[in-house]
Length: 298
Image (cartoon, rainbow, N blue to C red; front, top):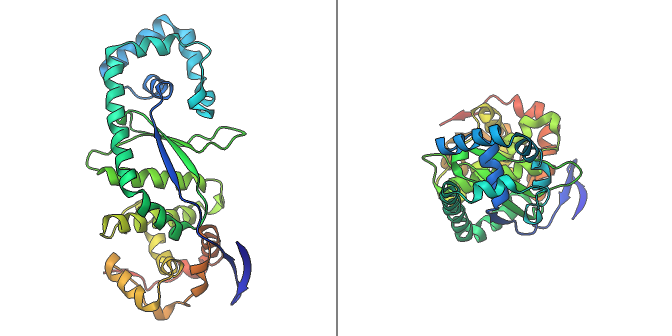
């Protein structure tokens, strides 16, 4: 990896990064903590929590404060007091919730295994940075939670996932997981321009990667508040993808987003930079990008 200036643009020339790898983990302590301290997934668990609050209040409060220690190293975590963990673990209610969580984990893992090669190949093309092993701590989907906690003083490549939209396919859920991971990787980058950063990350995962995997355009997908900004960045994103002027027409037809190429300086060097550098380019040129008014939806 090295930097050089081309036509006034500081270019970071990169080789494709290492493969991203995901490990989907079901951890009893993580599952139990979330069942007890997130919204109740059913009346039984709600009644169980009320009983704990009434009869084991001190233990319950201490257990709540253990979340950060738990997330530092879930695999090797040992609680100071496992009384409450054991109480829930021994119930038929927990066994049922555990089995449902395991079924959810296996469905995610199966889709990941089926698509891992094509996902990692495309991510190399799309982000051009190294994203190492991530542990996805799977919890019950009825919890409807996504956790990207940052443990102070230690970068933890871990997210907690317990969300499955009613009508979403498992592939779509996996795309949501990948989007969450990429947002966590960039959560401290250029925070003063978070709208631009978020818009570009959506273009990468929610739109382009999902389009490639599903074989149909997903460019209308994402946060509605970012839609206008994404459409204006889109022409430069195609340049970042390495599209020629002729190929841009095919992309426009595929994604039903039209723009007049004659209004744009074609930045060929964007095809050789990584995602950080592309974000910096968009921030540096935001006045020019955002003022373009010729964009329209077909």
